[in-house]
Image 1: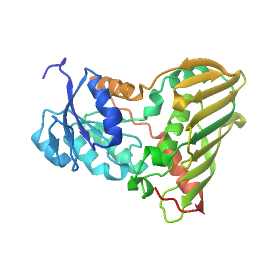
Image 2: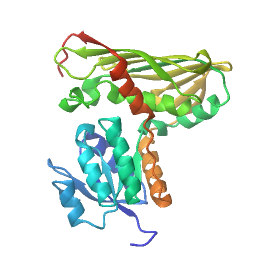
Image 3: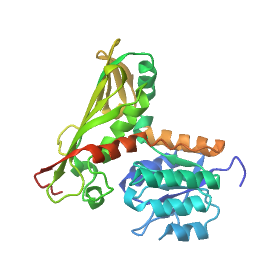
Length: 311
């Protein structure tokens, strides 16, 4: 294999997100070649499939990178084995079930001299970097996040999201937090939270978060998985120079209602471009800020039991 050959990559966990986003993004990036999958329920036609990560690592030393797309509760062992075998590694969001296990993976990647990329796909939405640049020298006054969607649409019948480590409504909510932590020129500190748990479930279906920042900055975030009809993925930042609004999950940006950016969905293409660049430089990218905010919400949040939810 030469420096110009594509990186052979394997996908671990061939579910909805892998099929909808990872496969087309790999196919559209000449830096990568899909060489194998790992799935107990079947892989991709024409691509070798393995039942376990161990079997893949033993049989295919030519595969240089893995993308882990299985639920976060089941990811650590596979990730540790891949890094120990000196394979570059991409982690779907959230990067793990706990902050501590991702920190352990970060140390393991450094010891073995391989790339670890903890992805936050929403940071690659078209308007996120323009928003970061516009806010860089503004005085911030208030941040309002409204992230509401229909869990039945995005996670039909997926029991893992309601189990410990599955994050519940924070599975989409962490996308909003990944944008906020990327665009604001100062950090936010969680000061209060209310988490709504459906009766009989072990993860929340809705959450309200309160944050504080320097200079009197206040922020709120409302996440809800019970919304039907149009979905809502909005972030509003009030500043001394006007109100910046991000809509459609960061794809669109406006200032005082005037459109500035209107992009398409290329988040996962951006992720794979970033992954290739990190591998080429021998670097890693593991930003835990969004996961820390979720962990803080579970530590500080007041639990409220609401009516049962069945999907």
